[in-house]
Length: 281
Ligand code: ADP
Image (tube, rainbow, N blue to C red; front, side):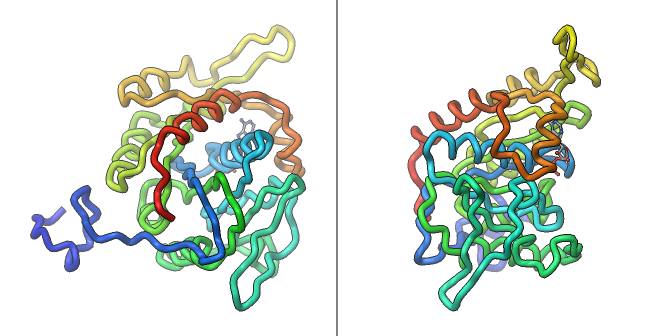
């Protein structure tokens, strides 16, 4: 980082002292109360799964819920919900597609001609698309929006954080990763953006023996609990590898999942959110 000149207008560094705001206004017809970002250190650890399950639980609890799929190069939310129709738009704005249980979804896969088309855009274009998901989509009446963030803590997630007023973030990690490094990076990024980390979800923590129900820790006993303590963060949940869950999500039936892995986490998040001042959107 270069030496601080205290002139934010000519500086591109993102430091905690930065006064200039990059936050964008949502579409004038949108009404979004809470935005929760779901982040991970890399792809494939279950970030989209946690985003989808969280949205399903909040929807079941009676909240009007939405998912913004900001994982533009690996968009898997529409597939998990079995949503195939294209998003419709007019001059006024773009409308999210509703899932079977009424969750509003916007994803680049709902805009592509062919959902299997690869998205090979560079970082700034991806950042621009996500910004438009915020500014040009009419999110009608949303109590909780979950944002499936681009993986990592690089340029693209940072742009998203800078443009969307996220109220809190959930960190998803799996035990075979360097969890302490991922949590540390996520905490630093969140601090830069003045966004609280709500807690950590450890995914694919263990496998349960179908006969004796013993938990088998494939990577040895997890140290995520200790890491969470070190960072004073709640360990929101430990989700096992669950083949039934994977099958349901692959078939587009995530809304039918019955596991209670994230119920306590959802209650903790609900409480945290009730106690946090509502940010202007
Ligand atoms: P990410 O969003 O981090 O890239 P995904 O949520 O898309 O990861 O998950 C990657 C793959 O792992 C998907 O096929 C998903 O169905 C599967 N998966 C995620 N979590 C679990 C789990 N707890 N049990 C079984 N399969 C899982």
